[in-house]
Image 1 (cartoon, rainbow, N blue to C red):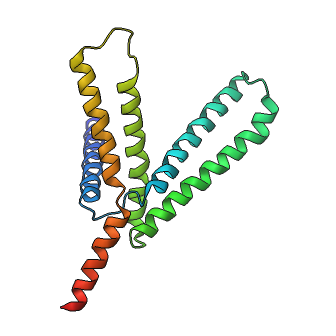
Image 2 (cartoon, helix red, strand yellow):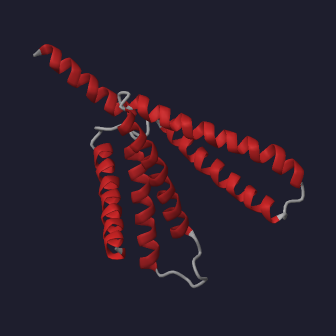
Image 3 (tube, rainbow, N blue to C red):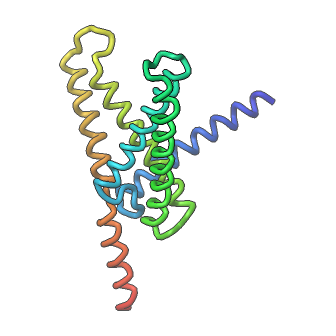
Length: 178
């Protein structure tokens, strides 16, 4: 029974990884809107930051290590939780709207946007972090620069709302002329 569960878990993980790259390819080819514009990208970054700050404050409040415990517990944390919730809901609504009101595709892309950006930010932080204190070789630094550049270029390519809209409009106008 346990081996079946392990096999299922591996197949599920493989399906998620393939889906992740498939969505990225469709975004690069301007067939799906991943980020409508830079403002949309900033909104997702703000959601991740808001979620992180909320989590850290909740953890600190539970440990009792905050000086202004009552203020943070009863005012700041609920406001941050509400803000994060509104940003997440807004993200889902915008993804559905930008992808021709297709609920399933919009929902998958909304989840993808968070995970892609979170992985990109963690990768950049990992690459730019000092590590274990030893000096990095020139080759390691060049690999990090290439990695950060590739991640940045990937994010730039996924800001494709106007390109997808233009492509859809040209396909619609081509179908009318036939």
